Image (tube, rainbow, N blue to C red; front, top):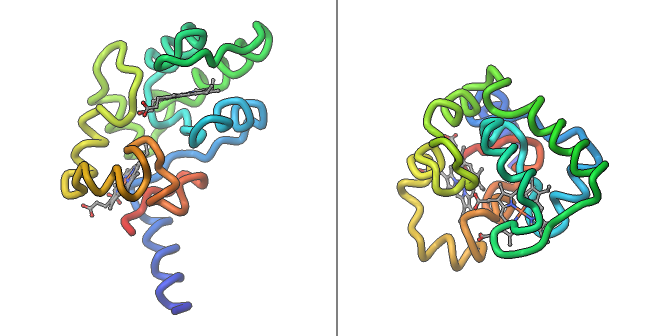
Length: 147
Ligand code: HEC
Ligand code: HEC
């Protein structure tokens, strides 16, 4: 099985489906407390800006932070957003994400990557499409290789 793991790692390294992992501890902690901490390279800066300005009403929950932490995390996401990255996955996301979109999972890049994954499977396996870690064991490293 070692060969299999090696191949997985290698294809993961070469794969286009990569974003930079989160290096900011505050973002990891605060944005990873309710769900998987989505990497900044998964949405363009206009999306992150909208999300970070509206944490008090975040998908129906209050995810607000104190002003200082909010500003720090907003800055980190803005600096590392998909439009600042040369990674193929991020570039595609920048190109195809509609203005003001605040979800990753409704974008056409996400949908085309999961064309063959049924809605039922998403529900059963993970409780939702946004739970990347349930299916992509290497998601926190920024690798969304096929598994
Ligand atoms: C108090 C809990 C909570 C915290 C803290 C939180 N979120 Fe969320 N987040 C949610 C919920 C609930 C959803 C909606 C889940 C769903 O409908 O699938 C969500 C969804 C999202 C989505 C959309 C995922 C998709 O479906 O594409 C993004 C992006 C997101 N959050 C980013 C963040 C960021 C950035 C932070 C840190 C500043 C953060 N969240 C902190 C609860 C939280
Ligand atoms: C229910 C399981 C499941 C969940 C949850 C899930 N994925 Fe996937 N994902 C898959 C499968 C299976 C594939 C491979 C699809 C195929 O082979 O057609 C895939 C493919 C991908 C690809 C393309 C990989 C490549 O090498 O072309 C990306 C990028 C991706 N997923 C990102 C994400 C992100 C980001 C999240 C969370 C927001 C997520 N996925 C959540 C199952 C899942």
